[in-house]
Length: 338
Image (cartoon, rainbow, N blue to C red; front, side, top):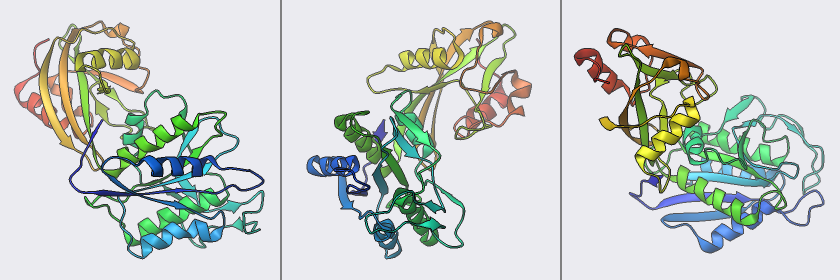
């Protein structure tokens, strides 16, 4: 995945000290390791937050005071988890099962009268694409009810309250990452994952994407609908996906179609090339003619519905924005030949 590098990008990375009887905290070890080696083209600011109420408020105060960042990544220890957890949200609730490092045992709202839940401002789609099929990384719907949750909730509330932006005008991406003990995932692996999150969020990535134009015997083309739980859930697309580093586009398409539809295809030629700028990424899309297949062979694994569409029904579904110009063209001029 390639990234934009128009200006110096400033990223805030935080960790926590040991708490609750622990002798160390892997979040601080990862923070220190990344700080020591740096990240090319990133101006990295790191903070060791105190494991108490003041620590949970610190970054929110920086945001309200006009601090400029292109991404904020909070790190914390999840002692009972076995995977690196990307937190989808912060909850407006504290239910401490132990005292924080100040002796506080909070019970109640993080911010009185605040929303019950604040979603991460990081791009879920970009992170999904970055870590697709990496089994030691997972999304989590609960950042717990301790200082970690307080920290991300306060950060997200501050971003929302001042409409904080990045240097390129995007909503400031912020996320909390819970790190498991090193016995579950090595320190080296955790450092690499966090480094990749920094790069993925600090600027819009440029994704090289391939899509398959698959026909049935009647000349209709295959369209696939993204499931409700996915980013852009309910929208329709050509089957396919991102070209991974070191992968050739044709090989990527063969792999993606096998994973998504359990089909073996032979991409023949590129029939269309599109570019589209989403809020969180640039997409360069090539559509490959993959010939005729028997609809009975299609077994959708990652989509919740598939349809076979002719020219007259092409615009009967809601296509992804990147695909729309091509669909309009084909409605007017007709589908390519299989």
